[in-house]
Amino acid sequence: MAATDLERFSNAEPEPRSLSLGGHVGFDSLPDQLVSKSVTQGFSFNILCVGETGIGKSTLMNTLFNTTFETEEASHHEECVRLRPQTYDLQESNVHLKLTIVDAVGFGDQINKDESYRPIVDYIDAQFENYLQEELKIRRSLFDYQDTRVHVCLYFITPTGHSLKSLDLVTMKKLDSKVNIIPIIAKADTISKSELHKFKIKIMGELVSNGVQIYQFPTDDEAVAEINAVMNAHLPFAVVGSTEEVKVGNKLVRARQYPWGVVQVENENHCDFVKLREMLIRVNMEDLREQTHSRHYELYRRCKLEEMGFQDGDGDSQPFSLQETYEAKRKEFLSELQRKEEEMRQMFVNKVKETELELKEKERELHEKFEHLKRVHQEEKRKVEEKRRELEEETSAFNRRRAAVEALQSQALHATSQQPLRKDKDKKKASGWSSIYSVTIP
Ligand code: GTP
Ligand code: MG
Image 1 (cartoon, rainbow, N blue to C red):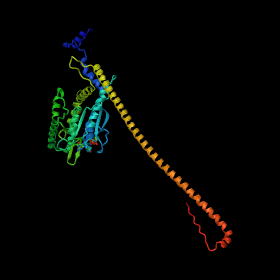
Image 2 (image 1 turned 90 degrees about the vertical axis):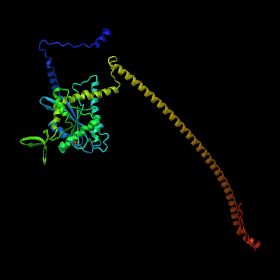
Image 3 (image 1 turned 180 degrees about the vertical axis):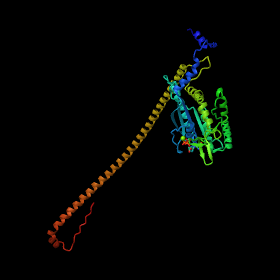
Image 4 (image 1 turned 135 degrees about the vertical axis):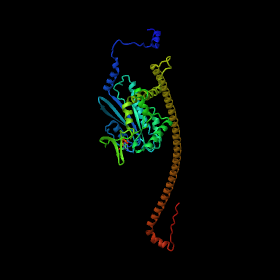
């Protein structure tokens, strides 16, 4: 096919013509085929519970799904917020639901809460990233992929009756572009009816003024538009959770019993539990799944791909080319690598030069030290030589004196041995004089 034909072919936008069928063909069974396929495949739904420790998260989950999930109580001593996902296989009629409940353990327990939202944001992003990586694989298997992306975040508000805490506002603001947030007032049985009304208005006002986008039940599908619109006006839902059964009249109902009365979980005059269950599970579960994919995941994917350098072309004239983008990115990466390599080489050369200079300086210092020591040594040697010479002179002088003394002594000894023989002669000869020897030692 010639290039011009190709262009004409790809730019052509044929108007579909309406035709009537002569009889039953059978593609009206497509919705049934879809239902049957989905039922066989099963569904997955992932709920993130964010709220202070002990606010009633686990109780509400048990109440919502009318079962008992095995969850441990969290301690108040967690160093930071930790995400704990747990997956369960549930079945109702012939529909299988893989339900994952993710608890933000330790939320609101730290003294410094500045970073409390971060582990939650990171967890949500990590699930998007896993999905994106699967999508980008050459051999991908999205059909049986275990989707862990968070479909809804139930944000548990403490029933203070005052206003939202800054931790609530900051966390919801950080999450609102990543997940469908449904705010709920927990333990609503602890707040009076009139206070609850004011509290709801205040919360909604604060969310709007801080630009926090919460999930709005969709009103574009006629079948549910009316109920969803009504329910949107009831947000945030004020809920009570309990798995305890209490006899009211002749019926056993789930309730919380107090000395002054019974709060029935499923009584719409007592709380909004039924509204929450209706909206979350019975009417909008599929919309929550779809919004997660088409809005939140799409945003993540777009930002991530743009970060990686992929861009859509400018309209029809410049269509997006994966090949070109890849080549451009590769070139950019290679030149960056070269630049880094050159930088490192230069750094290495500089380092070697510096070390060489340092070594030379050290060598010079050592040489100087050596010369100094040599001089000191020569001086010492000269002094020692002088001392030795003096000592030798003293020794020879001493020897000479000793020889003289010895000579005198031997003379004296000789003289003494001659004395008795001459005694008589001398007595006779020199009577009257005495002899005195005096020895002078030179
Ligand atoms: P951690 O997982 O430890 O953070 O706690 P949690 O948020 O899961 O709270 P949990 O469901 O364990 O409930 C804590 C306490 O609150 C229990 O004693 C519940 O009985 C009580 N509780 C739960 N829901 C409600 C409620 O709606 N109203 C009142 N008054 N108490 C509730
Ligand atoms: Mg719990």
